[in-house]
Amino acid sequence: MEKETNEDLYLSEEDLKKATIITEGRASWTFRAHNLIFDRLAIKGIAKIHKKAARILLTGETHVDYIGLEALNFLAGMDAMPGSIPLEPLFLETKRGTIRMRRFDPKYVWRCVDPMLIVELAEEEINRLRIGMDPYALEYFDFYESMIWYMKEKNGDFCVPSLKRTMNRDTHFRTTYFSCLLLFGKPGYMGVEVSEYFSDPETLEGLKDIDFRVLNEREQKEVRKLREEYGRINALTYAELRFAIQLYQE
Image 1 (tube, rainbow, N blue to C red):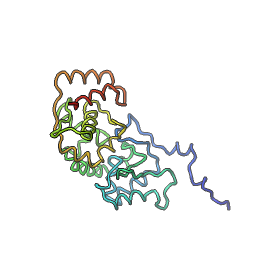
Image 2: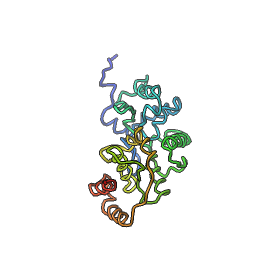
Image 3: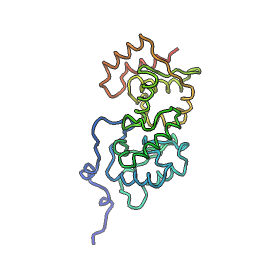
Image 4: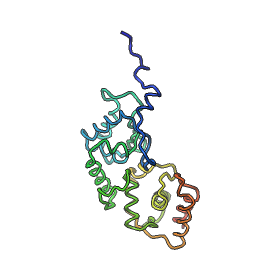
């Protein structure tokens, strides 16, 4: 009998390509990378075994303050479970106290589990963020994109955060990031992914001090122009960033 080598344990580039699940349409806001067919076992296992750890299945990233250390360790240990495929680990602990899925496409992940679980997870995230949204009102295969859609429906198409307290460097970043989501539908300000932004406990604290205001007529005219010129570009442009930033300059 031939001896098994380490190379025999890993998939070839061709097999890896065949195992990649490519979903249709544009990528969701929380999309990080296409899932592999093997991820399905881990996704379904988490949903069945550990309810707190399953919270990561909604957005692809969650904080230890939210799920607890035991759930975080459970996720971190998933890649070492017997029978797991020796690929790049699915879960990654970050220096910010979060754990994220390296491969996360909500269009695939959500379809691997009971739809009612997604509703339950959405309700928990809604309660955590205190936004009053209907957990059944997920307009997109993305929780945060659906949340922003809800906020725009509630507060208007030209609503932006309006702070109750004095602006500092941290609140300026958070309100600018939020404004880019609301006005242009584009995450990624300062290179921060949307799941990273909302999983940060400091973001939750900052939401307590946010009201919303409607842009004045001049500002709305400028936003319309920016949407027309740069709406087809997925990434934030300098012009869009400049507009969002100047909204909070004293």
